[in-house]
Image (cartoon, rainbow, N blue to C red; front, side):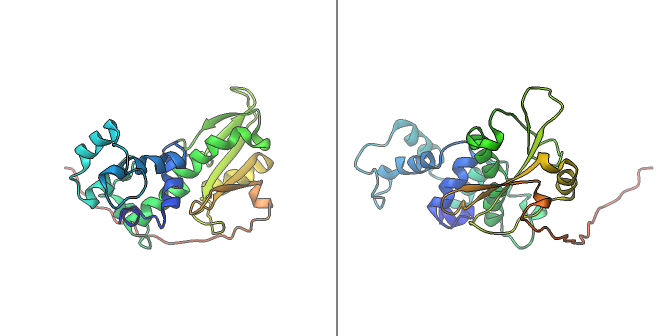
Length: 227
């Protein structure tokens, strides 16, 4: 029930997504779950030892919450407002699926990149600046030295499975076209089981085939005259 309420299909997927999205290791999220085994007789993990004091304190504070309230609390840790979700998510996704999908395509994939980029040959020796809040058409700006005019741009995308579709916004597409060889698309795959990544330099000229897709939206507003 807990997995379904958060939009995940397995514990492995939940550990991967929540782990990376929170800047932790997936194994750490699993260990925190298992810490509560002594309180639940049906759990066969760490039930034979006393629960740690800080875990008991968490349980005493939040143990009386119903599932919906507790799920809403977890979602709020990642800036997900369940009261506003229906106004901003696509109709094809219910609230739980929208939450998990947002983490996969956003926070989890971006944190994955930040955790692994020092070990990626293409980006070795670069300083990394997170630009996700700047609306500049990419998620990270990489420079050899601070304030250096030349830079690499990295746009990060996430996929639940090994394969799938991804989209670029008009801004991302324009920046990718302008920067050419200095623009990288970093795709994190397979959050469902074990995340891995693929890197596409100058993705508009790479093996990917982007097709223009248009959708017409009707936006309603309420107007009042001030006299």
